[in-house]
Image (cartoon, rainbow, N blue to C red; front, side, top):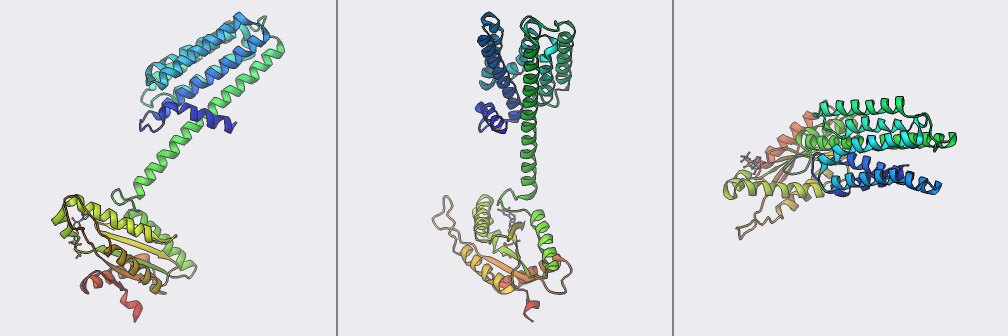
Length: 366
Ligand SMILES: Nc1nc2c(ncn2[C@@H]2O[C@H](COP(=O)(O)OP(=O)(O)OP(=O)(O)O)[C@@H](O)[C@H]2O)c(=O)[nH]1
């Protein structure tokens, strides 16, 4: 079932690959509904041919052609026409089959329930009126079939009706599963997108201040509970204002991006890097002693100072340096903000001592 649903969903995405279209999921629902209609009418047509009911099988082939037309319209971009055609083609096909072949006792008319699910997932939330109309339409057609279709016909033996009932249940179930899959997928992607927006700094693509400070709380709590060490470092690019003033804000942005990239590439698994604000970054290093943190920061400082950033219109590359302050958790540290404050004090020291250097929190060295 999941194998089938994966391939059906992929097929439904034929025309939608790489689409940034906001209607992406609704189109996918329309395509899935058409594909299911194609499969149902095709299998029904084959069964009728196998039974020797050649002329009767025409109803199924016409149903299949109508579904193919709708699917083609949908993938060619005529979404509105495809969306409008579907309920009518579907209702006509179900009614013809119920009246002419299966009879109301086969429960084939229950396939109309698919239109209710389709009205929810295939239309915009703002199209409430259309959705209600479609549900009413499905209900009316269902009632019409239930009340006026013959209970059985010459084609529908008891066994055949049982087969149609089971097939109807399976198709309706598959449809609901596929549509639920589309909706859940959409919600998952939306959730991921919102989380990305909430946690990632747009310019540098590293964690933003909110996210990295949330991780600082976790790392600090873990360190306290497991009686382990952890270090926080604050990194600040030197004389960044001059870069902005000399080369412009856009170039300043590029410099920030390149430096963030270097930092991101050189941090260890389990470390957390985030943009603290402006040209300042914070690095959280769990389970790390001050000396080890110093070595890591020293290596990072050298990598940044070795960066030659070429920009258009400039013969000489831009060279940027960074000052870094590092502090370690202490036995009497009660809140993570205390480590950050000590790292900040060490950073000021690095600036005061001439920049492009790493300074450790002095209180640790006493
Ligand atoms: N291009 C760019 N500039 C930024 C961004 N955020 C902050 N800045 C700039 O970063 C500069 C920071 O300047 P200062 O705080 O004076 O620090 P500095 O020039 O780096 O000097 P020191 O830190 O003392 O070495 C300001 O000019 C801000 O406008 C940003 O996202 N993009």
